Length: 64
Image (cartoon, rainbow, N blue to C red; front, top):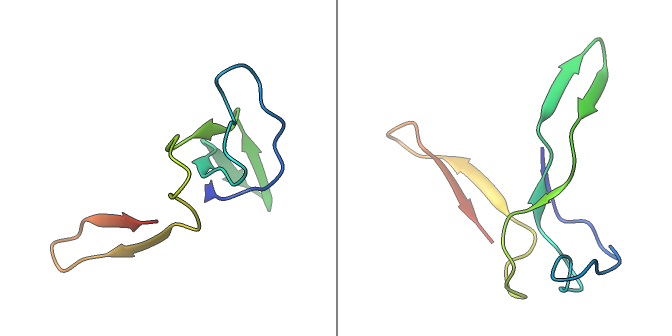
């Protein structure tokens, strides 16, 4: 699951941006998403609100 949460408190070098973009890896079963830890996708401050689409070659493209 890819998302852009707001307000994560900084932890050392992590979460230094006001608006992070990152992901969870997990399994969706019986209406419940069981996930691992949140991982930042990008550490720059201009990468936010990612949009993903499938191109004509079957690739997933992310633009933020």
